[in-house]
Image 1 (cartoon, helix red, strand yellow):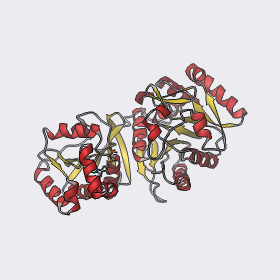
Image 2 (cartoon, rainbow, N blue to C red):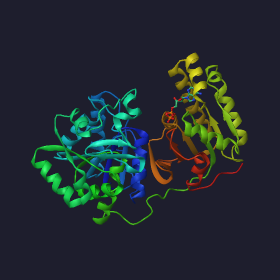
Image 3 (tube, rainbow, N blue to C red):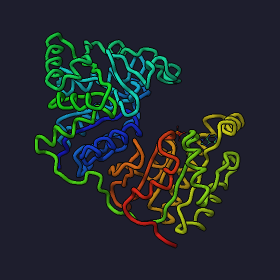
Length: 426
Ligand code: ADP
């Protein structure tokens, strides 16, 4: 089995978001968590995205992991590689976007790669090489003060040039708006001028579609989820993509549960909404510090399983979080809760839960690790950026994993309706 497109994502939720975009475009997508061991069978999919945690790790580690991922994807048959980073170009002058892109480009023998984090649907647009978030330049947003990757440069040509020794150029708005032929002409001119990276303007989805067509055959593409918008059509036109429901997932029956560890405003609202009509239990970080609370929460959940989806949450308003962090320490509070969520997830699955929703990026990471999940088949979208998934391998689980701020108010219960299969009754 050979895949068509191989993607390397620098974080977990970004990988899911990218897969979601490709599935909507008609490509069957699988997300693998980390680089699989040698000999791991290639999943039956059109695209595989390997999710790394390489956005803010040391540069060399990011490069090594990305090259390992590349080797696996090429071995799986991928002829085009997409390096996916955040739509706000999260990086420092040291990297990791530039060094990873350089290493991939050299390994692939590519001579030109697009650099395009634009995602107009979420307000990320590029004009005259400058990245905007909504109406503001990137450097005028909260990203300026990001603790790990402060973005003080909105000009992507300069931001990329600071991270690579290769030359960086621009495909300006006029070419991108005129269509794929004009873009291809510009690519040719840039190549001739010795440019290796082409930052591309894009302010609307049609620009991403034009770019997609013009990037046909490019060995390496770099960008946010948006740059994937125009890629499925290339494979379809080449007769490589079968016409079928790319979002189809196997039906998974079992008890239903929700675990929430995100304290973002959206998740807090979603918890209130679900708790109005469903059994809900709050985990207290202080009780977790004393032990027992995990077992108590599991015992409580078992009483309700099957009657209705159950909700267990640690999420709390900012004041309560600050208090817990003051007393327990910031890292310890987070770890206590993540460990508890991981243990509860394992206990729930042992008790027959097969349909699970998790809120929070770190929380999802902890749960997926505890459950030994190595990969996910990506299904239909629940809300923008968040699809329903089914785990690979035996003992399959239906999962929805969302980063804190995603999803509408009814997300936590609506998610189950996008998972094929049924809730088991007691
Ligand atoms: P998000 O996607 O919103 O960033 P995460 O799961 O990534 O959510 O991060 C939330 C962090 O907050 C986790 O480490 C979690 O353990 C921690 N946390 C959750 N509830 C509390 C709480 N009541 N007090 C302190 N920390 C908490």
